[in-house]
Image (cartoon, rainbow, N blue to C red; front, side, top):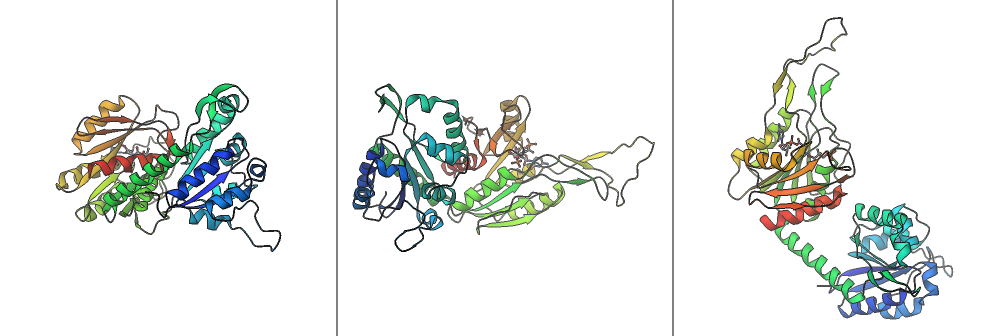
Length: 402
Ligand code: PMT
């Protein structure tokens, strides 16, 4: 599974740095291409010569070679790697990563890496359990890094506790499982045509005002990006949002109102393999929007609302056997019950529940906490994660049902 995989290893200044040598040897044995970056302090624990000999590549420490001025381009390294493993990762490096500090090559490569990043902490148990370290680890998870939890055992300090770096063979296993799963998802999603809706809709009151909601589009765009990453061809119908698609595999159609979103979705759904409806569509619109700006007056202003089309229900009615349809449920109370009702009413195959009762979930934030409920009455709960990670969880679930 690791044959020809390009693995970048980052080694930091820890007594566990010797395990990096074993890790590199195992990866090379698996026929992966390995490059190594060390922090300056890591050289005090193990020599670059050892790691260069094992990886069969020069080890990089500085931004440039002082002998000839040759630049070690961290962006190229970040782009080269299929996975970046920081092992061992000290509390200091984890703190810098969590805060975007870029004062050595290992950290700049982390900031420019587009590949999955595995962080393998190694430190004393008190350092690990300190709230600052725990907060930094949580933040890295939210950025999408995969943390390989330290083991419990005898530590360099002589104390017994949690903090020992994960064993190299287990790191190799985790990496293999990761690539296996990616391969499976790729094979299921490649070239699938998927409609994604995102963002809010705006329903005009007059020439300058509208009814809308707090949706930023972050969740929907993250799902579109994730699906495109796995090779799906995405039509993204989006209400007003500052988000911008980065992948070439995403065709963006911008709309403003629910009626426009409805029209675009109906037009393309027949050509799709499925749809994920993330948009926060306004259920009502002002019945008689004014073309002019409504002037302030002493009179009471009453705006009559008319019901908007239910896009999900329309697509649910159109859905063919080979297509899947998924939606979101944004709830403030009785989440599971309401989500289940929507799943049935809109003919969804699964629904993603997010509740405004959960801190960090729902509108605008970079994080979300979801529960997936499906038509087979399965209920899968996830912890609070970054919206990118949530998108990965949804895509991993999706590949099991298509
Ligand atoms: O955009 P962000 O700031 O990142 O926030 C993300 C989010 C909170 C908007 C997102 O995670 C979310 O919950 N989206 C659905 C919000 C919503 O409108 O939920 P709902 O329970 O009212 O609707 C249920 C489903 O029907 C949704 O899939 C919705 O897209 C769809 N719907 C609703 C009304 C309507 N007229 N047409 C629809 O298609």
